[in-house]
Structures are given as structure tokens and as C-alpha cells.
Length: 283
Image 1 (cartoon, rainbow, N blue to C red):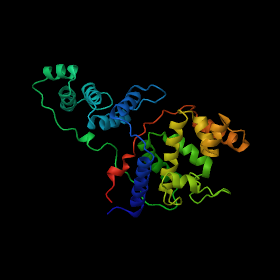
Image 2: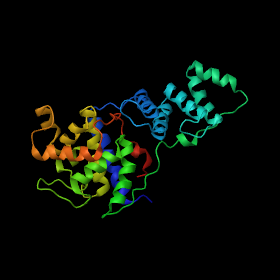
Image 3: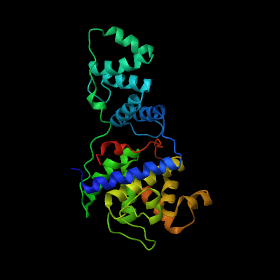
Image 4: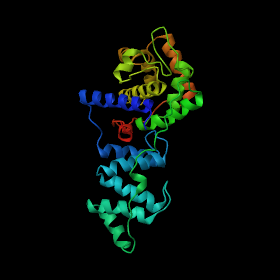
């Protein structure tokens, strides 16, 4: 049986989906997902090398028919790049690429006619199962576990999320500000509603809404962490109005504090993809 908390998160993400549709957002193509995967595979464009993340992104793109992503999955298996070397699994993906016209994949298949390809069970489930256990008063370790699971779905660095939570609420789930910002990530009611949060006092929903907002801000400000943080604190309108960090002492101190802890000035720009959590929940 699915817990009420998981149902709430799933319902919340459905709202996000509908808002994206209403706003005429365009889901990134498989090609865009594959390009992001390549950044993770090779550790470029400000992205830390992460073979596991690259593999999952290639899976998403390949299962949507991207030929180069299929070839790259074959390459990872063929060369033991971030995966255990497995010729049968490599040939499964080379076969898909070859059937789509990839000449190099065809040449590889021609050399291994005595080896049969097999289905790739690792690629049927694109992300690990969530373990979002209900806890109304979580400790820092529980919050960290939630962040580590939710942030990757938005391609957001969990370390940035944790730094924001520390600055916003000090990990107090019942924190509330004079401006009625609520919960771990201090969502004001307008921001909560904007990103489909049903209950800001539910710590998992609060984290998910805050991460969704960070995802939006990172795309809005081209990955500049200082502007993202300033916008999270003072609103994106203020950042755009002042064409940089607003001259508010609170905001300036806020940005300095988190940058000092986070230590990175640029965050990789995540793909504008709908959250795949929806596909894993049975409602």
C-alpha cells in the first residue's frame, strides 16, 4: 500500500505537471537529455563527472529513441565505463543504434555475431525507488536522505539544497518567518502555490517545492549560483530589477553565507524535463 505521504507527493507532482502544460512549457527532447548525459559522463561544462547519472540520462534518451544515446550506453558497457564490462548488454544497445542507421554500431555488431544481446534490466527503471518514509519531525540525517533522493530528479546538486535549508530554517520543519515563509525551505504561500505544494508543513512536499523552485531559478539565471540564491531570498523580480544581487543587507549576507558553505559559483543548467517521480507512483 502506498503511504499517504507518497500519495501527497505524487498529487503535488501532478499539479506541477498540469502547471507546465498550462504554461506551455516544452519538455526537452531526448537529444537534450543525451547532451546533459554527455556532460555528466565526461565532466564538462561545469558538471562533475558522474557515470551513474550519465547512465540514467542516457537510458531516458535511448528509451525515447535517441540513437546516439543508445550507442553511448553500448560504449559504456563495452568499455566498462562506469559499469561492469558486459558484451551482451553492450550489443543490446549497439543493436538499437544500428537499427536506427548508426554505421559504427553496425560494424561492431558484425565483429561479434557469435554473441547474443540481452535485455538491459538496469535501464527499465531509470531512477532508484524512493524511500520517502513519513516523519513529521525529521533529524538532519533524514532530511539529507530525502534531499539526496529528490534533488537528482531535478538535476540539482543536493549540496546546494542542503546549504539553502541550513540557511533558511536550520533544519527546523516548523520554522516560520515574519513574512510567513514556512518549513524547511521557507516557502512563502505564493511560491508554494506556484509550484503546486499542497501542504507546506509536510517536510517532503516542502523540500520538493523548494527544489522545484531552485530548478526554475537555475534555468532562469543561467546557472549563476549567486543570482539564484539572491532570487530565492528576495524574489527573481528584485534580481532582474537591479540586474544583480539587490542592495539588501539581508540578501547580500544570505548569498555570502551560502556561497561560503557551498563553494561553487556555477551550477550546471538542468534540462527542462518533467519530474519522472510520477511514473513510479501507483495512486
